[in-house]
Length: 242
Image (cartoon, rainbow, N blue to C red; front, side, top):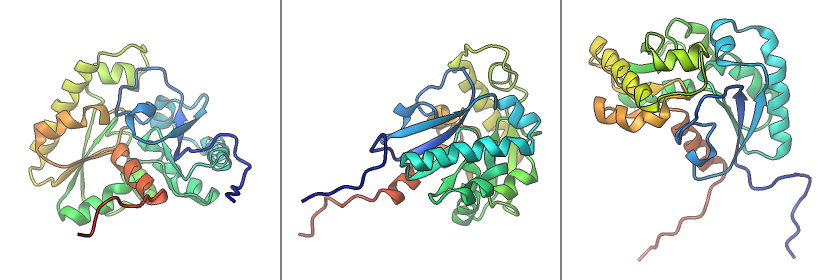
């Protein structure tokens, strides 16, 4: 007999994603591209909540739709919940308290772990350095972690498309070059940086190129999602003893 408890509409989903509304390209490596990861994702789109609004004018009334969406994801059977923008760190605690599955809405929650591993400052590449505040770091549990922050707001392609929403089409090669420039500026400011964290979920598609350029470990929302998946859905090992 193999009696399985029902009550879930779609089975076999690992992680749910609280997603901002956006229409620019999401290449492999983006959390809103489900082909980025070797396990199943599902999405709740928060209509009307855009990158620009979250970065430039976050308000408490954003929380209610996020909590509703997180509860819907939990009811759908996901094993953990993440987010499509690192600036959701402002609401990390409230969302985690609202559900009974693990929540990691921002890659910034990795900051204490990265600093513990390296004992050196952590370089943070963010969509907007001016918008990333101590409140975001505190929300992610990273208050007091030594960080060096470099933003992408002075870029052209990235800023036009993602920060200002001037258009939806985007030159991915140009965005990669802009990220490498920002990375070089970051380590030039503090060569003691031990590792890089990508706050922005739009940057992991270029993480391999950034690591090749900077020769440092690179963490992001994809590395975090992979770790959480492996913790909430453990599999048996296929090795041998002798």
